[in-house]
Image (cartoon, rainbow, N blue to C red):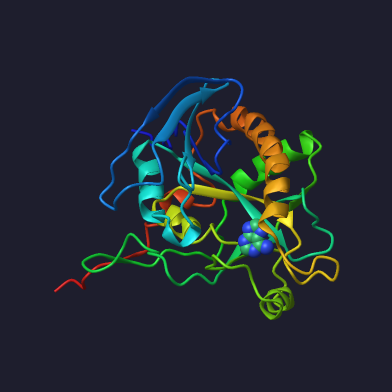
Length: 278
Ligand code: ADE
């Protein structure tokens, strides 16, 4: 019999700050706890439908008592979304800008990361089962295309492509660090997208990030230091735009589709290290 390629019914996972899920038009809303072998996710997951498309929201830092980026259980968060049936994950994250032409309020659909985190569990694989997935292209271009189109349609200030430097925090960078990252031609800096992106790849999820600029970090001659006050002010304005972006992008992602052209959904096919045959 002729082989037909499998059809995927997309379920859209969304990871973001609190308030992202307060989205007009989200129907059949239900908060549900999802247990994982990796421990507790940041919060319960909000299941619902936007324009008929199944969505699952995860508040990255949890509602209520916020957890710092180093303390998040990234493995539990990604695994919970996988267990909830998600096929794609859109990550919305606040970042500082390392470029003059990316002022606060801009959104960057990044396509690369530099992972400078060091105090987080970074893999589902360890003793007993070893796998090395490719991270050469960490972002799903199909999701990136959809996000770019939706953002441009809304007239949001958006850049396509860019490198996100992920730092450990929780302190912001020194000026020397900020300038070093600029010399590496990084575009934005934040604390949350690693190991999230690596784990999404290991979980064979299509993954994309919308980095939302809140500040100029400390390299900028007119912005000598980052302050939480300044970040939070822009954060609220960005959250409104983020909700609009989610409402615009989700309907177009819901149609049944074939396999991911980039192979995000088959990342483990050639990645697992097995014992040599005797
Ligand atoms: N999140 C928002 N702004 C940031 C900055 N300047 N550095 C690191 N993380 C951030």
